[in-house]
Image (cartoon, rainbow, N blue to C red; front, side, top):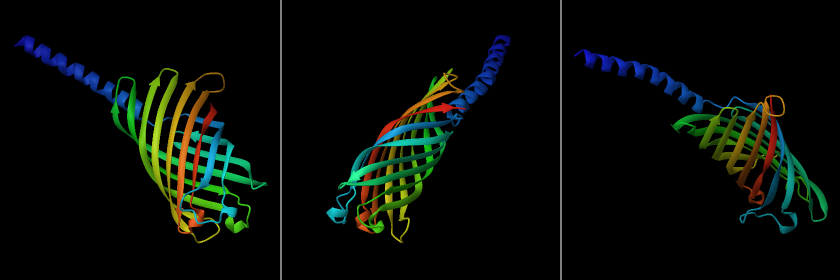
Length: 236
C-alpha cells in the first residue's frame, strides 16, 4: 500500500509541474509577437483592368512598376505605404497605396518548437492610380473589411520565423464619389526576426504577396492588382 501511495504522490507531483510548464509554453507560442520595427522595401506591382471593366480602352489604367514602400509594425498592427510613377500612353502618372491591418491570433495546435494559429484581422486600404483622362477617370478607391487566415510561428533563442496567409473581404467606395462596391484581398507573408543582430534590437527580413480585385457598381473601376516584394526592417 505504501508503494502505491508513493507512486500516486509522485505522479501527482510531476503533473503539477508539467501542467504549468505546458501552459507557459503554450502561452509563449500563441502570444502575439511583441517585436516593433520600421521597414523599407519594394513591391513589383501589376495593376490592370478586370474583364468586367467597362471603361473605354483609351482611358483604361494599366501598368507594371516597382513601387518603393515604407512601413511600421508592432505585434499584429501593420501600416504600409507605397508610391511610384508610371508611363501611360506617353504621359507620366502616379500610383499610391496605403494599407492598415490589425490582427488577433488564436492557438490551434503547437509542437515542441512552433505553433499553428488562427489569425483574425480588420483591414483597410486606399489605392490611387491616375488615368490620362480627367480626374473623374482616376482610380481612387478606399476599402475596409475583415478577414481570417493561418499563421505558423517558430521561435528559438535569438530568432523567430513565421508564415502567414489571410483572405479579407472589404466594402469599397470611390473616395470622391458615391460609388460603392466590393473587393477581396489575398495576402501572404514570410517573416524572419533576428533579435540583437547588427542594429538596435535586431533586424526583420520579409517577403510579402498581395492580390486584390475590385468589383464596383460603376464597372469602369473594376480593376485588379498583384504585388509582391521584399522588405527589411530595424527593431527597436
